[in-house]
Amino acid sequence: MNKSVVTNVIAALAVIAGYLLAQPILLTVGLFALSGAVTNLLAIHMLFEKVPFLYGSGVIALKFESFKVAIRNLILTEFFSEHKIDKLLSK
Image 1 (cartoon, helix red, strand yellow):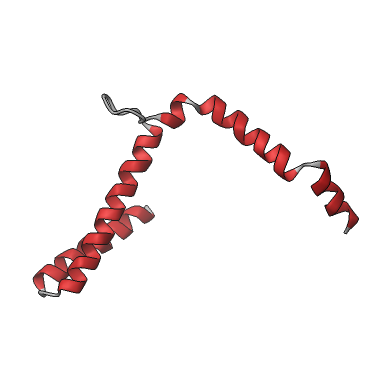
Image 2: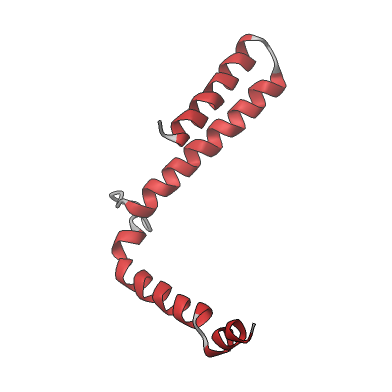
């Protein structure tokens, strides 16, 4: 089962229980958890999928090649620099 579905269901149950049991703290915790979960779900969707008329959505798909090159350069310069290789081999 998907972890996000499990956490969303738990948050929704906390909202329902807080409302039915008249527990404002439980209701507030559930509402914050549920709003955070929905926000994260939308943000991840918007990173990878283009949403019509929404600026900035689908940025991963649009700039995939430049991200790939930038990550490759970062790994090569940070992890495989001469200084770090010499430091590793000297140990």
